[in-house]
Image 1 (cartoon, protein in one colour):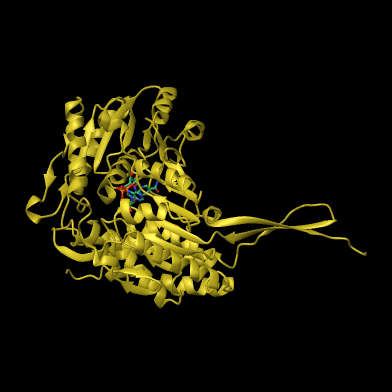
Image 2 (cartoon, rainbow, N blue to C red; image 1 turned 120 degrees about the horizontal axis):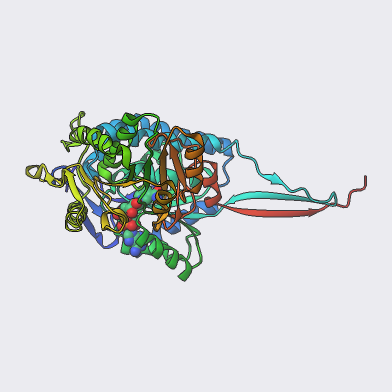
Length: 487
Ligand code: NAD
């Protein structure tokens, strides 16, 4: 059975899937069984959507004064923090990241996100249009209704929080489907939301497989909006399913292959090396915005590589439950196979493997890969083009600014990018030319809930985070009032 409760949470109650269907949730840390999880299908999704719809129609949440919704969301954030150790351990066991980061990054960011949107609830105003004096035109945002949320396994709590927080703050009801590879914290979050006073039916969780519970949500005729984070391949299907069903609003945060351009005049080479290495090895490389295409100006390449090779051993994988570990386990055997196949492709296509490249900690029963660096990568190689979603850094070099910008933009993705230079004209000029949702200048990992997150091109449609996220979860209504004033 495992230690954790894997039942769905629908209409405020933990429930088995109809027909008692389950799947095993095993830990990538050591292969242990964590829970048997409800394998939700069409009937469970129907029940969750019906409960979300009923809650929305009853206005128990949507009709609450914004100041009261704010209070409940802030309590929800407090609940998360008061269960921080429990949630961090669960996240680590479920998807393999080091517990130190699950606690300091994942738990804190999820709580902060929910608190921030809670705080915003009674601070965002609507608009009055500049019409002639014979009219008063109100432009108001209303909740869209029932929001389906589908998230991946790399940052299960944070990815969920980025969507449920603005959706709930705007007054919607939510049905969340976590990844089948990491379903546990989502279920616990929904329990904590209930404990914080968010009414039953407002926040439901249906664990299950993508092609079953996920597709049932994307095709559902009574879901008003779907917010998806995951691969570009599935993201495209989400837009198709939205169009084939009820034209629900579809928002997608998808893959990336972010270019990181380091010029010879970068202000601090050590900092650039540290950011390049930690950016691609953090979270075992399972980050959509990992700076996985590194372009180093040829004149500093040897220096740069020497420093990177000195840092790489610090990222050797360790026991994720050990607080000193900085790189943990890959999420499962399938993802491990994918990463190893990319490493093999890099070698076969002539890239120079200068560090790592092997599986590690095999005796643990879990899935671990060494931090891996390829030098001499050229743009047509598979490892320079495709998202690996593992701890693999591809290093390319360049001599010409216009050419490196062209290469950086030569990707189906456009999630993030970085430029390192102390020449302000060059840094800003290159930042402007890069086709990406976020461009980092002379840093890579600084971030804040106040700025939007999302991509150009096939990195998706729409933005998470910041007040702009409200646009996804609200309809805009105009009320035009005729005024025949007697004065
Ligand atoms: P995935 O696309 O395989 O799965 C994502 C989610 O979609 C899971 O919950 C899965 O069950 C569900 N799903 C799968 N098939 C489905 C279907 N036919 N219908 C409906 N739902 C379906 O992605 P993954 O492997 O879980 O996550 C890795 C991907 O996520 C990477 O490409 C990464 O770049 C991307 N990602 C993007 C961001 C971002 O903000 N842009 C953030 C994190 C991860």
